[in-house]
Image 1 (cartoon, rainbow, N blue to C red):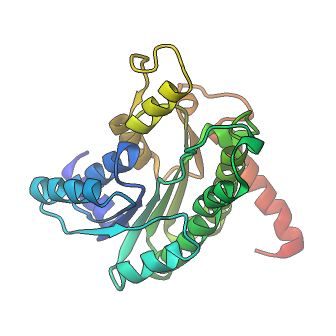
Image 2 (cartoon, rainbow, N blue to C red; image 1 turned 180 degrees about the horizontal axis):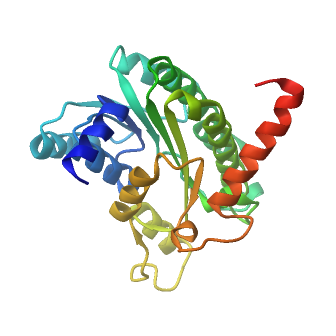
Length: 274
C-alpha cells in the first residue's frame, strides 16, 4: 500500500481499532496489519499472555499505542465491559474476529449451556459492539466494521448447526448495517472464510481424526487479513476464496448478496420507509 493510501486508511479508520479475537490466527494478523498502517489497537481476547506478547510486538515494530483487554466475550455483559475499557478513545475500526466453534459436535452431544455461550458470543456480544462502536462512527461520518465470519453462515451444516446459525445472524446483521450506513461514511464487510491455517484449526482437525491434519495446505492468516483490509470498502459480503475469481458466479457470491440486499432494501422502503 502506498503512503498516500496508508494515510487515507488511517484518516478513515483511525485513530483506534478494536480487534476482538486478537490472540492468534486471523485476528493477530489483522492487528499486525492494522498497526502497520499506523492505527492504535485495542486487543481483546481471553488469553492475556498472548495479547501481551502481541502488544509488545506491535509497539516495537510500529510505535503505536496498544491497549490489552482480557475478556471472555461469551459473558452476558462482555460488550459493556469492552466499551468501558475503551472509554473515550476514538474508535474508527471494529474488527470482530471471535466466534469459532470449540465443540464441532452434533447438536445434542453438547450441553445447551455451552451452546448458549456460543450464542452470546456470535449474537448478543457482536450486536452490542456494533451498536456501541458503530454509533460513534456514524456520528463522526467515518469508520469501518469488519465481521470475520464463515462460509457456514450460508446454510445449515451437520455438526456445525449452532455455529452456522450464529454466523448467519452475524452475516445478516452486517448486510443490514451496510445498507443503513453505506451513505454515512461507514464501511461494513462480512468476510466469510473456510479453513485457515491457525493452531485452533489444526487442533480441531487432529481431534476429528482428519487425514493430513498437520500437513494439508490451508489459506494463510496473513493473506486473509490483507484481503479483508483491502476489500473493507467493498461490502457487504466477501466469500473467500470464491469471490477472488475473475468472474465469480452463482447465488452465493458476494456480488449476488450485494444485489439482493440493495433490491430488498429498495422494495422494503415502499412499506417501512427509508
